[in-house]
Length: 336
Image (tube, rainbow, N blue to C red; front, side, top):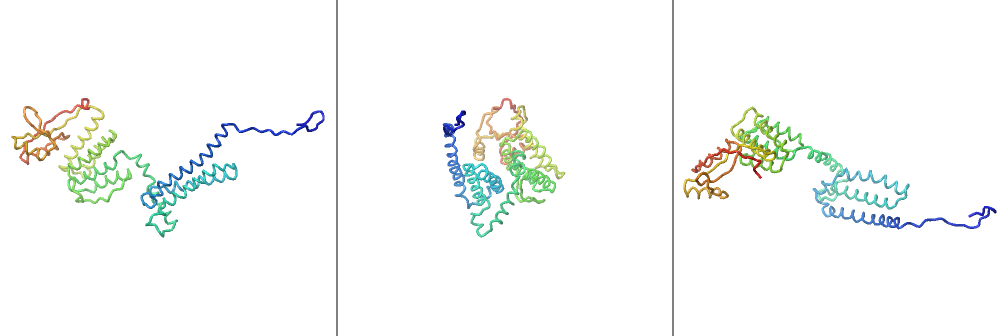
């Protein structure tokens, strides 16, 4: 301080401010955050490190994402050290770079026993090639309809239902498998390698519907099934029966979602005496005999096409059991 009259210094003072409680607390939290970051990094690596020799684990790590960690981290590290002198932030960046190194090594399969002796750049090239092939998987899953894989399986089995796969049917299957990015074994025209029957195919369609696809997609499957049946310009009896039944199944699903009525056929076995009741209970133990129209019957099930119901009926008639079909209307506004 200077005296204005004499221009002489009369004292020296130092001005300073003591850190507030908030700043002290913030400083402690920043220091703690670095410790927590170390713990977090350890826990991340610990889960993977134990499984680092497993090929599937190595393949599950994105090499590109790990390497991008270097591209992002290095500029921040240099900035924190040489410009801002923020050593706490620099410590966090170093930690991130360390994680990037560890996950890169695990991701390229450096610890997998089968890769011993293989060079770093060779492993890196293989990992990048695999990632390139799989880079669109998430996007494809977002764009493809729900249950797309089962739709492809349905089309494959439908093509083989008449014990002959036409080239036109193969072309249609390949068209949709490529569109939805679904890999399938190579299909060849002619006799299929696996025998397909209506019961298995119906179970597959029901499994698809149980996944709860959008009604618009389900209705689109009806058109696709019809297109598949007509792809070779010849609709066999098996294909016609399958199309009718599956169209009904999908219609049932859509009606259940939207409400309304639907025509169905119920197959009943009408036993002629106690011996036939015992016979039915032996071949269909899950069914119970019920009183219907003044008589005892076994209700086998409800079906969506008359032809399919008649085919089921014929099966039991061939066993010497009297059976019939009954047409009924199902009101979905009354079905819970």
